[in-house]
Image (cartoon, rainbow, N blue to C red; front, top):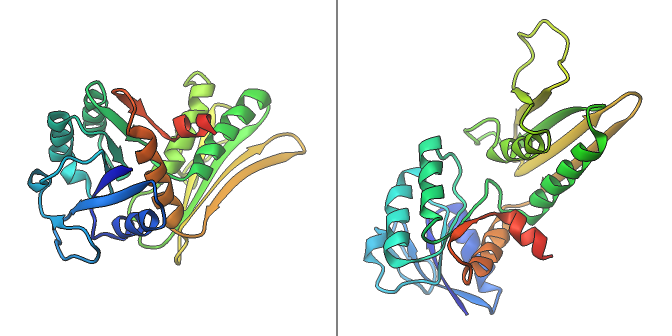
Length: 252
């Protein structure tokens, strides 16, 4: 039985994680951390992570980037594995995440969906096979309340493709002011915002007389909650290091 603490327990994703765990028998929520300490289930919610009376097996974080420093400090001090599912970290914060991973197991992914991470693997495979004969464009669609653009997932996909290309590609985010032909070493990244779209990501490989498209669509936030719980259970017995959903995909 994996004992889990949810950081950001009263947020939308924190509640989704609780709902997901409620339907499983291999893990349980023992506590939550949130500035809003109102209870909605059979576990206590504390305002600060330092108030936790019991050390969990794993922490799942869906809180806010501003909470990262105290969270990582707790994990280092208590030797507690952590699943970081919050988006919007700065380069400095990512550096801190990598440093923490030298001491405790850290699971960090821009997207917790198993399907998205399979898409990443397929996109890398397609890039390696298609070589330089196809132009690559990434299109992401999200709801009208999403603040960041492009999405962290779109950048994760682009980075994975770029690694396959020996990091020789450059990202182009907007073409309306570019009065020139497309260059071969470009990856176009486009953001669409509207309605209540949970998340759609598409990778298009456009060649001579043929187009190949790999896409993933999330119908609800449940897929992300489920993925983060799977990540927590995977991480529980891992050695210190930096892990992502690719490690889980490799186990399948």
